[in-house]
Length: 312
Image (tube, rainbow, N blue to C red; front, top):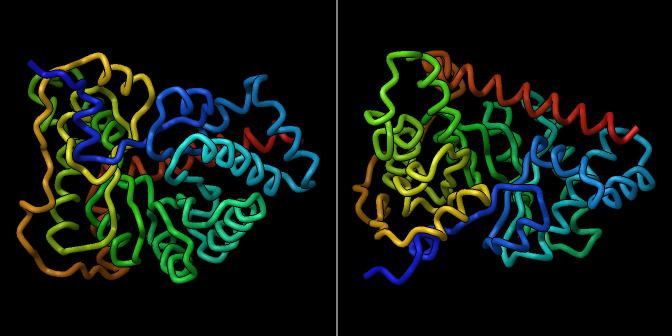
């Protein structure tokens, strides 16, 4: 009889990260690390219990952009008090195609954390995995600023991120699932596209095998889950960032959880080498990546603008 729940079993293979900006939820689920994004921060910034973070940012800065960065860091700093590992904080998505601006904003975020007494090693700067985002990552990594390249929907993005030396990448499972489900409409067969057959799971699995085969040092963190089955199908991925509601589901189940991904079982492959032209062409050939990357950037940018509006 299985005496450990699925969350305990998952932690044998994978670092479990909380995907939320809610500090109380992080304190409750006690993850190793945490990820935030503008949408998650906007959601919790509206709650009265976190008003002090908003008011402090308004007192400390006059420009909307700096106020927004201070809110992100304010939440991140509070989160770091409840976890042993790192927090991911996102650069303004409106800078996704601007290398100098991405680098500038990342440096400011790190400086704000350091002014609060947190070492930069405990912070991951989230940057959209555009070509420009990857070049900004290369600069930042050389300065000891660790990056989490996010909004990854294609192998080309993962390869460009790894080539740039990203500490971590975040391929999105659920948003790929959403795209294929919407594209197939009434023809969608849930049973034929679940677990290891889920298109989002297959994308992360392909990325995992490519980077592990190339012996890349970039870690892979599956993100954006729609159901528990996607999580089970990626047990063994370096990290998984999971919403608290799915952590609760895993805690409540005691079914055996076999390891799905094992880096030791991946044969060695050619080193990663991708040019800008190759990156752009391969992205152009992937409709799901083109649509979802653009959609994700627009969504995060819109929520950043809403957050700035709260800070006027």
